[in-house]
Image: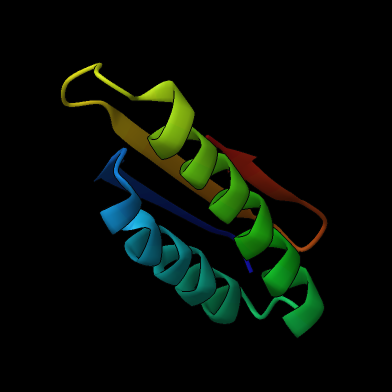
Length: 79
């Protein structure tokens, strides 16, 4: 299945649940194996938490843009 989705969220810890829900929904929609979906969520969770905690401090309204794309042979995350 070919699929692509994008999500833009404020770089705040309060948006972390929305980011991981976006990834989980994409993984399910694409039929990723559960362990692969979990790995993808963990990667995004770490990146997002680090951005919100360390990268966006005092920077105003910083946004995080997530793009996920899947083909039968490849999964791509652009953060």
